Image (tube, rainbow, N blue to C red):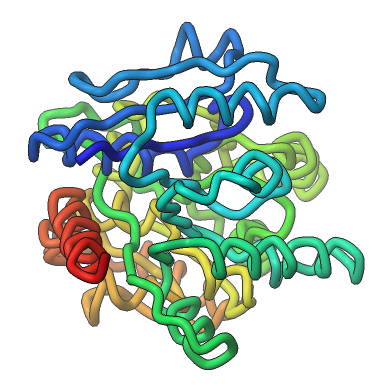
Length: 354
């Protein structure tokens, strides 16, 4: 079997491509022929590390109308048994239209059609969603919410394929902290929920409490929240920005407590936050919310509170005053080998139907 991953644009700063790399790695281990079609950008050529044993084709040009015919030529040349696309997009639709022989696998790790983009953007992504649902041999979704909604709204059965562990744990890593510190890991994008931690810190400051908190991760809102920290005299908060995986893991592993606020929005219900698995791998106590995929990974071992600054302030004050031992979240079962088994089992069913 030849399984091909089709992607668009630069992979820089796009953690979703971890999904294609890790699945491809496991498929190669199972003697599946794996290939990647990747846009020809400097980052993709110089930095992206694809699985050993897989092949890659760089597509150029990457803009303008000629990009679509360039990708189609590569697809026709490779002639894969299955072509995997992550999230419907205008580029995926315009590339694939007319390739009737392609057995398409569409994979949703977020639901753009349900994001609050406005009426015209919503209509565009709804039409893209519908096109991919109708033209795909297999539908994959990263959240239970999307699986349930696809069945209820559209009468289609999607295969549940969430994320999995990705850190290489190193318990010998040195602690980066001089004193007990709470840690939040995640990129600061608009619409994410890191604001809850900052506002909880203000509430605690007003109570005379200043627990040390560090933030790990990049994103476009870094400067905004650094200014917030300075304006509110939250000198006990450190915003690190992006750090390499080894440093990120050492922050998680040696945290006094890990913070993971998440509101029950459609966007959060539709996605599978990969950091849930990283938090669980670190085995430290976690304060979070019973929303979406989180309880399915952490079970009853986490501390669940409402997604409000007040609830996080209370839980953080309690946690900092009470040192806690490591927590076993049983995260080992959430691995990419198991995810590849799920994918191959679904493909076997399709093969029997052909």
